Amino acid sequence: MNSHYLIMGKLNDFITGIMLDDTHDERYRQKIARLLVERKGFLKSEITPRLDLFVRAGVKCAVVKVDFCVTLNEKICMIIKYGPGSIVSRRRPALAASRLVAYYQVPVVVVTNGETAEVLDAQNGKVVASGLEGVPQRSALIKKAASNCFPLVSKKRAEMESRILYAFEVDGSCPCDDSICRL
Image (tube, rainbow, N blue to C red; front, side):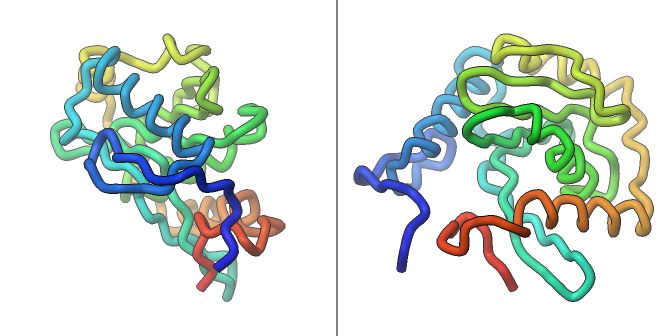
């Protein structure tokens, strides 16, 4: 099997403890996981890493990953999408993912390259904070979730968001990228 990444060995996942391939991207994901727990106050049990998300564009289907989902009081309140390079181009697919990971609109979306980040209000897509320090603390996310009505995502909207996510994440991706599963 051809891998899309240089594999430098194995490492333990900070959240789950499972062994993963040690890649440059995975090192950044582990840095983000540590940030969430050690500096932002989240419990490991509130963070789901590498969530599989089914997407469809017409007859084309795939499974893509959402790097981190943060769940508080049984609702996903924040998702984090990591990708190397420029984060500006990652806003729209991350917003699409925030409308597909649950039947409701997840309120906070973070896009990051591991060095910097943008925090988006998922309702309107506006950047509300920048930099890794802008990622909300657990207490701030609890407060935001308490005042959020978690609006439902219509079936039509979900279909369109799925197409957008497919176009950004799957179409044109490298065939050897094993983080995407084309069905």
